Length: 323
Image 1 (cartoon, rainbow, N blue to C red):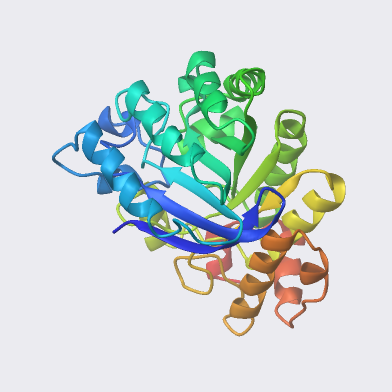
Image 2: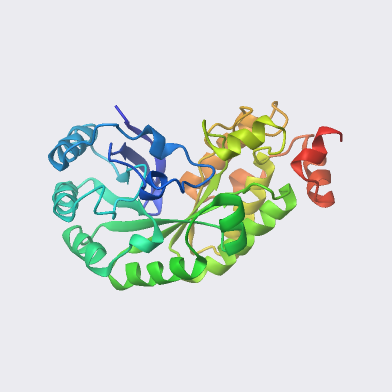
């Protein structure tokens, strides 16, 4: 079953999130051979499409995990594509799903994700009306505000201008915007990855309610995996994530800044020297859940000197092989 719970920040306070991956047909760009270079999720979509009724039943089954429980819960719905893509989830099925969520008093926050070009006022407004009174966010995979990086390093297929327009529509429709920022696109040095993330946050902040800093990890069967296998790409240092998160929260204290370092400490995931990875990843998660910067300000390790050198020199990944 692809649903699980974990501690999280729920509408600004500590709580628990139920993560649900609906087995839809997956991202439409993957189907036309234009998948994002770092993403393998659409390849895991079922070969035989599920009916809309089956998707609704699957959501019901997942919701039983938190049904009747006390506390603050968020429900985050993923589809390996876009929840607002009518080819994955029909409008009537989306409405039925949101009616189920509206009836659950312990669900304080609802998040769905979609590509910017698929955002439509009617689609968002009808959902916002169904769950009125709950914190409803539509997550957009901006990744970077630099259209050249989005094109060359990610193959994203949309622009910052499209993100801005989608964000404006979402707000007009009565929902909030969650913005995904990718930390360390391919072909960027560690220093430029940090700068790109900060600049993306700076440009997107006027249109964003919550930032999610998505720290790169290597997924199987992707272009990033091929670069990584050749020694031409290294996942970011966890110290780089700490730097971006601290800067973002200090610069935009009124915004929620989230991050979950998936795969932290592994060769495929964000990592430092290996000795401090577990502690730094825990600090990042604790900050994300509480928004308390003290978790990030009280961590240090000797490998920070190596990270600082790499950042200061602007070394590229392939250069580190001989360093």
